[in-house]
Amino acid sequence: MKDKSGKIIYVGKAKVLKNRVRQYFQNTDQKDPKTRALVSRVNNIETITTKTEAEALILENTLIKMHRPRYNILLKDDKTYPYIRITAQEEFPRIEITRKIYNDGSKYFGSYVKPSDIRKSIELLRRIYPIRTCKRKITGDNPQRPCLYYHIRLCSAPCAGKIDQESYNEIVNEVCRFLEGRHDEITNSLEEKMKKYADSMEFEKAAAVRDKLASIRNITAKQLVLSTKMEDRDLCALVRDEVDSIVVVLFVRAGKLVGKNSGLLESTYDMSDAEVMETFISQFYGNGRVIPQEILISHEVSGIEILQAWLRDLRGRSVKIIRPLRGEKKAFIDMALKNAREEFERHRMVNYTARESREKALKKLVEHVGLGEIPERIEAYDISNTGGQEMVGGMVVFKDGLPAPDNYRKFSIKNVYTQNDYACMQEILYRRFKRLLDSSSDKSFSEKPDLLLVDGGIGHVHAAQEILDEFDLDIPVLGMAKDNRHKTNMLINDSVNIALNSDPDLLKFISKIQNEVHRFAIEYHRQMRQKSRKKSILDDIPGIGPKKKKLLLKEFGSVKRIRTATVEQLCQVKGINRKLADEIKRFLN
Image 1 (cartoon, rainbow, N blue to C red):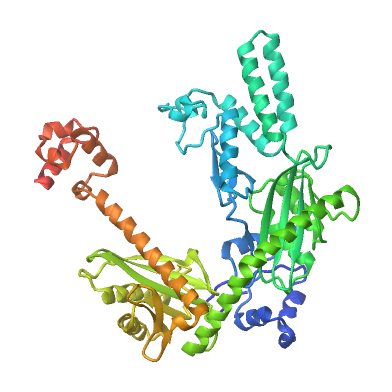
Image 2 (image 1 turned 135 degrees about the vertical axis):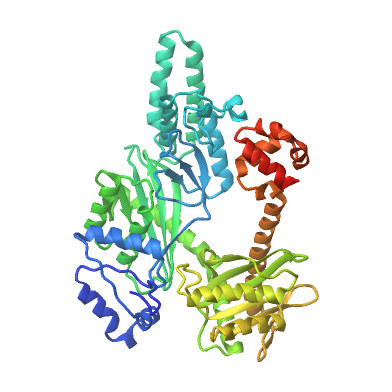
């Protein structure tokens, strides 16, 4: 479903599409607020036909992740929790910490509640298995100098050719098995290897394996054993209230509990438990995660046969989704439910207060400013410079009162040559709204804001209003003014003068926006300053790129010495011929 601008606002699937679509548009006055808002914005419906329901599920999941439609339920994974990533798609894989999961062929393990826990895990692993952490490109044809980690035995130095690919991949496989919880397989294999070395009188190698065994047993001794049958399974437990849902997943590998993940689905009030579970499973496992042979769930799920077929295609082997009602497996799910309830209480305490405060602030903003409705998209702008040098601007976007970093944009001031904040503000607003009216392909510039906030007083508001008048745009503008202590204290334009000190919710909300746009602009300004410091006159010489610039400075030490060097001396530098040497001399002198 698309709105007037062609933006996708909802993606859905159905076996009988006519019946599904009809449900949205019949008796709209009896629908929930979200559905009424969706229907009021639908301008066009585009359909795609697939061969099977499983294909429809995959396509729906892909389109939701690609377009992130406003009225779809999106899984907000616990991105604040880190994962261990093994870059299995590389010739010599590395281990690292990440907070995002990509479908790039890497293997992900976790999540871990504390970053310190994950760092300790990697440190211990590297002492047992010397796997690399660096981002060096290793081809095998061009050996490099090994780093310090090789000398302290935390890396096997594949970059320097100290280990062949087969032996290195054996290390990587053992690391993956360890992180998957297959510790018994590893210890059995190591015991056989140790015995083999001892039988062949290779006692030093046998001792090294013995020490590795001791380390692994020491690490795994405290793990909770849920089953002695060595199964791999995930335990998915759903807890919800009238508004939101949380699904907690406990990862069980080889019968041992090895990790936990929690995913939030907001505004699920119009969905059944079965629909919530289907949405969660399709978005959670469609993201490059390890899929076990069995998934236990606390509630029934819609389209279980389709989900199992889809998971089987992803895994390459059969996957069972089971809702246990009694016995040992029911006890496992009860344990997962207990974790889910605790997680939901934490979410309620942290988020509900913040949401309530945010909603109050938006309503008061509507009331004070005289807006027709709560602004869905608020854009804020700020200018940053140092005495008129490296002048830049920042644009931050808040959607439904929350920051939307994917929509943030940076501006380098091009046509203002003196320190003039008003002129700089006008330049970035002109460029921003020109892109809007030119039907820009940039997703952030193609959306019209409901409210503009500019960092400054009435002068900045007038400067912004002139640009909006030039484009004949009717968008409310407010200045975020500060007091003598540089604290946010007022919202201002020609007809509004709101003292924020008397309204804590609104003060907190506007301060958050102003601090965010200020931080964003200053951060970009700092990047430009650092880039400027690295700039050299050599960058302006035709035919001199970063590589030749580096070689020249390495050979002569400074631009001054390059200027005094002879043409013959310049020609001795790799890549510098006589014609280019003459050009360097002409340009510098």
